[in-house]
Image (cartoon, rainbow, N blue to C red; front, side, top):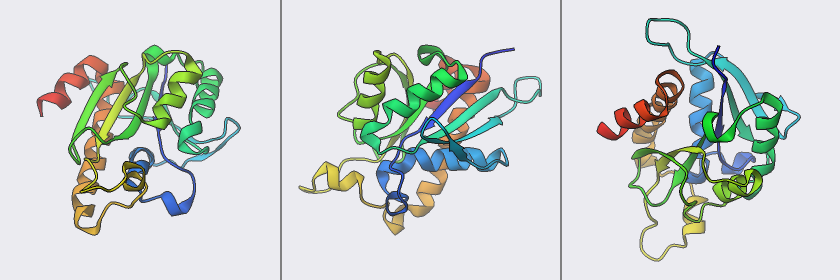
Length: 198
């Protein structure tokens, strides 16, 4: 029996942030929970959590046990809840943690998987790296593009996806959920090759 995966979607907890670009990690977790027919519930580690089976293994067996989670803290304090969840479920961050986050340095709606590396100024990643004392964990980067003109990046990430992007966003969220399922059923490297080839 393989160890479970901890899948973290980053974002801010209040309803006014729910449609922000910065909350795309939460949006992907919501799609995954919906696919599994599950709902997120409050966990003592300051997070909303659902324990599910995700995807289908090669050969048709149900996918592995997965913990889907959205930290209930604000983005820049994500590290505490993520570390507490990893400890609670016995997750090794360098092998079975996947963090889903918005990425300014990717074109809007582009997806990339990476393990380790810098945080690119992302406060949620910085907090997680600090909590674990390592940057060597997997990330699913969801591109949101750069702000137009001279708009402050901080204002841009805290603005909603515009109405003209909503159809494309819905497709992106499904593709991101597919990517997560590939990671947990096929392994990180195989999923990375599949996603980057598309």
